[in-house]
Each structure stands twice: as structure tokens, then as C-alpha cells.
Length: 195
Image 1 (cartoon, one colour):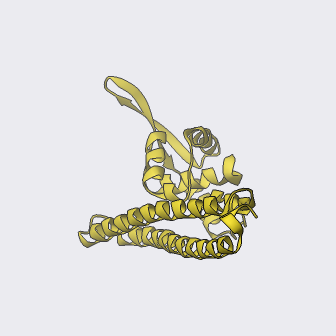
Image 2 (cartoon, helix red, strand yellow):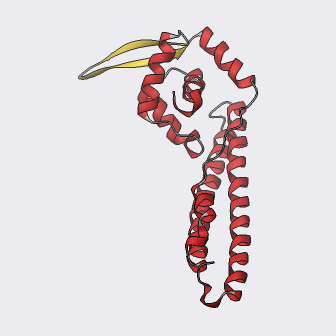
């Protein structure tokens, strides 16, 4: 499976919150963990097949009037035990893929002004995502206030959301510092040309 086999754990975790179809799993990913973890249908359906074969999940065909039957997946006791064992296992270090850092690493190919523009554009995108995260935080807080869901689940959503908010704050601070360094270099380099 892709992502070093993590797809299976994503699916087990989502199905552990309640039975879901493959489509519902994908939609849940997009609305929740999609900000830091992606899975495609091409990863989801083969993993569901594998998990069913290992008896970690079961499937039930549900007839629908005028539409194709849908398959709903539920986690088994064996699946819960397997998922919990993964949750408490040591984290595996994995290199992060960050396109911004990749481009900055190759920054000497561009003019300094082009690198500055890249960073400014990134800061604008980070600001948009930051506002989105704050809106999500408000929605979670309001949902907790009206008792629409388990507070414990909301707490874990807030913890991951806080990580995203703090990461964006750090990215913006880093980009501002990088821009200052580039501007300082640009002032010393005639025309701000490539280094």
C-alpha cells in the first residue's frame, strides 16, 4: 500500500468512528484530515479489499431503490486491536515533502526578486489557510457548546488543528525572515541578479 502502508490505518481509524462506504471515507478525509493527509480512491478501495481479506473490517451490501447497491464497511474486534496496536507503536521517522523548501533550495537559479515573490505568494496562501483553520476552530467550539458531539473527539480535532495553526504561524515568520535576508542580499547585489 502507498504511504508505507499507512492507508490501512487511516481507513481503520475512520471506520472505527462508525460504518462507512468508500465514498463516505473519502468525503470524511476531505473534511477532516485532508489538510495534513490525503488518500485517493485508488488507494482507498484496494486497501478496503485488503482489510476485508484480513478480517480487520467486514462489509455489508445495502440495497438502494433505483440506485446501485452500496457497500458499507464496519471495523471488527480484530481490526480494533490491530489499529490500537499501531496507535501505540513508535512513530517511524519519515522525510517531509515540502515543495516550497524544494524551490527555495534551488533558489540560486532565479533572481532574488523572483524568490521574494515566491515567498510572498506562499505567505498569502498560508494566510488564507490560517483563516480557514480559525473558522474550523470556531465551528468546533460552537459545536461543543451546543453538545452536538462527543467533547473528547472535539478535543483531538482541536489538538490537530492547533498544530496546523502553529505550523502556519511558524511558516509565515520563517518566510518573513527569509524575505528580509533576501532583500538584504539584493541590496548588496547589483540589480538583485542570480547569485
